[in-house]
Image 1 (tube, rainbow, N blue to C red):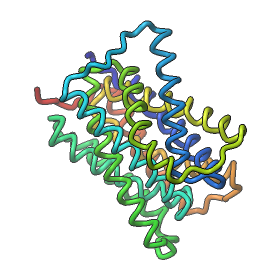
Image 2: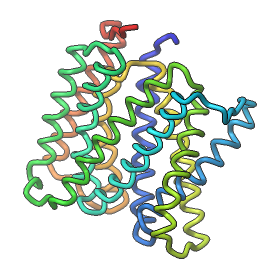
Image 3: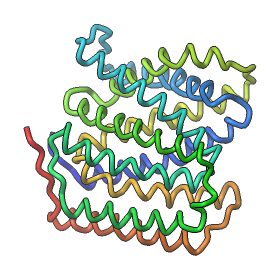
Image 4: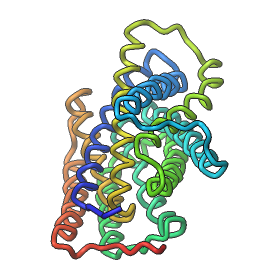
Length: 295
């Protein structure tokens, strides 16, 4: 597959934007339903949406997968389910901005794992951009770091490990599996795995809840699809610095939806993160950013 960094970066930004919208909607729905029930409804409806899209594009769907491929999809489903449940729980305990800041351990874990499991050589410019973005994250965190709830902190940290493992598993399969098939199988196995837990925590569902869950599912399917495509067109180590821009999206969402005004620390930290991402974008535009991948 020919690399296309411009397209991959654009898809990554689209992924961050959609993830922000989905997170806000899940927090809103979470005020009425249990987080595990919400997660199940999201992947359950998402499975049907992905299936319909596969029928439209006439993509062959095989339910006879090799043991290795099947194990990879089940692993992805488990990591996706656990990470999403922990993430929404962390959002409730810490809030959008603080939970997002902690989640930025994901690019570090993912970058390290990519060098081990995906054979990618760590580009020093990308590593530098990640470190600069971390500084921006700490600028944002500093005024509120002592207000963190220990439980929320632990849950948010655990979710970062799950997301990193999920990202690496996705990247490993993007070279062999159709991007939409990945979406379908991921949602299908996530539905199967999460169903018993959702049944245990099940609460009465109203039509408005079904509508909200359907909207979240559409966004969720689109979100993971563009993520898979971004991994197909560029190495993970190139895309990870841009992950920090999610904090900017979350800050904007907090202001527009919850009327939470960004403080000076958030603005300064966001600028630092944006500059680091802009640097990587300019470098790759100049053709100076190439990451070797071991075969």
